[in-house]
Length: 124
Image (tube, rainbow, N blue to C red; front, side):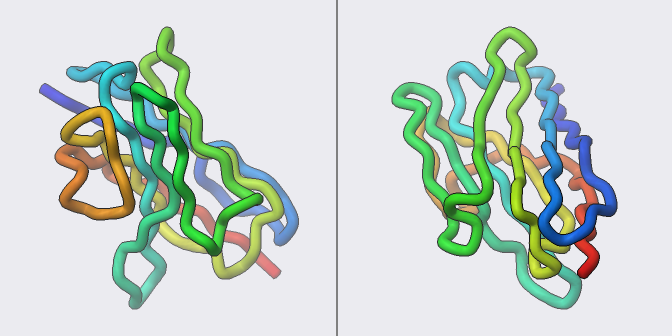
C-alpha cells in the first residue's frame, strides 16, 4: 500500500522559513518524479514544485521561484520542500505527490499518489 505522509507545516511569520517533508512508503522516491502542490481556502489546487527522478530536473511555479527548493533523500525515501522568505499569500494546505514515472511537470495527471496535506500559515 502506497502512502505519502507530509509533515513540517505550521504557523510562521512573514519572512520566515519552513521545511516540509513527505515520507513515502510502498514506493521508492528514487525512481519517481515528486511534486508539491498547494490549495488555499476558496481556491483551486495549484502546482508549486516538481523534481524528476532521473535527471533531478526541477521546475517551480513563478510565484515561488527563488524562494522554495524541492529535494529528496533517497536513503530516507523522503521528499522535501524548503520554503524561505515566506509570504502571507503562501498560506495553504501543501500536498506532496508521486509521479506516474520519472519525469513530472505541473499537471495533476502526471501524478498518481497524493498525501493528505499539511497546513502552512504565514502571518503578516
